[in-house]
Image 1: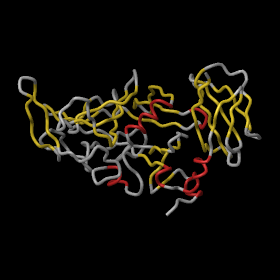
Image 2: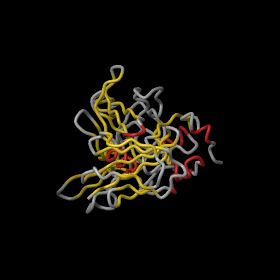
Image 3: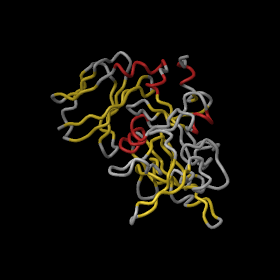
Image 4: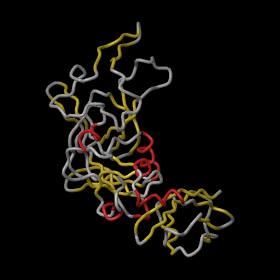
Length: 298
C-alpha cells in the first residue's frame, strides 16, 4: 500500500518520525534511536542480530556465540553463528522487529552516504554531546547522541557515554584474508569530537540503532518523480532532464557555502563563474527537497 502525500508531509511513516536529508539514495533517517523518546536520548542497546536489549552484554550471553577457536601459535578468536552478510529487514533486524512497517537497520553504504555527503559538527544539546549532521540546501539536520556502548566487564556495562557514539548497520564485517568462520564483527558508524566514520565492532557488544526507510525500495508514491530527474554539467551550465516537478535550485560548494540560489524556469542553468571542484545541487518544489546530486566540474 502506497503512502499518501499528506502523510509524508507530517514527517511520520509507520508510526515513527523521520528526517528527509535530501540524500540521493532516498534514505530517510529516524529522528531518534530505538527506545529513545527524543533525539538526545541514548535509547536501547542491542548486540548485533539480537532484537531485545538486556542487562549485561558478554560473549557467553550473546545469542549467536558458539565458542572460541585457536589459530595455532597466533591467537584465539570467537566463533559466531552466520546469520547473514546483510541482516537489514530480516528477523535479526531489531529496527524491523521493534518498529515494524518498513523501518530497518541502515546498510554500510547508506551510512557511507551520510558520512560522505553531509556536513557535521560536534555539538552539545541539553547537556548531551553528539554529532549534528546537516545536508546543505534542504536545511534539515540529524542529531546522533554520543551514547557510548554496552560491554559488561568488572561490574560495569555502559561505557564512553557522552564521549563517543556508535550505531549498528546491518552489514557483517569481513576482512580480506580472514578465515571463513572469522565473523565476530559487524559494521557500525563511529563518531566523537574529532571525527565521524564507518568502522566495525564486536557483535557481542550493545550499540544503539538509528533506523532508516529507503524511499526507492518501498515505493512511496509522492517521491516517484525523483527517479526521473537527472543533472549534468556541460559548457558552463547545469542541464536538467526535466523541470516538471521542481521550481527552485540551491547549489553549495564543498565547504557548505551556498553559491547559487535560483528559481528554475528552464532546463539549462548558467553557472559560468563556477571554478573547478565538487558542488551539491538540490532541487526543491514549494520548499520541499525532491532531488539532490553531486556535480563535479573539471
